[in-house]
Image 1 (cartoon, rainbow, N blue to C red):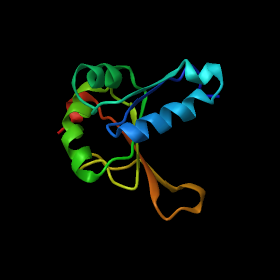
Image 2: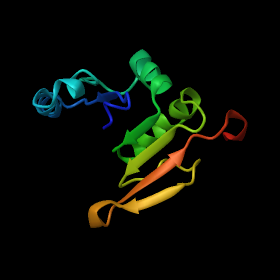
Image 3: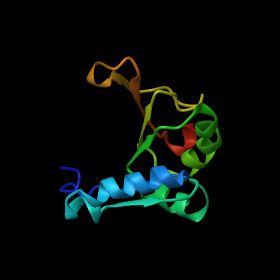
Image 4: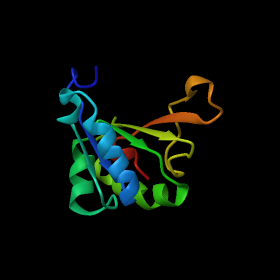
Length: 123
């Protein structure tokens, strides 16, 4: 369904083994999905990150709080207002309040959804 809606996926994985595993899993998927997803074996930083954030309509983060805090100012500066940010396990810094929180598949660990505020409302 995501491919039908034109969704694209861009991932960053610094661990070589996890990157290889993700790439192999992606290779088993349908061509329509494979053509819409790229996973970089590098840290989420630099020009690739900026470009990815500027094109993103939904950002999913599964990072430790320290990593989220280091990316928070970049994310908020580069993403368009109303862009959704979804986190699993950890909150998105201190600057945003979740607009929705659910326990996916009865998990005790919540998925939290945030929205990037308009530029005037950013702290």
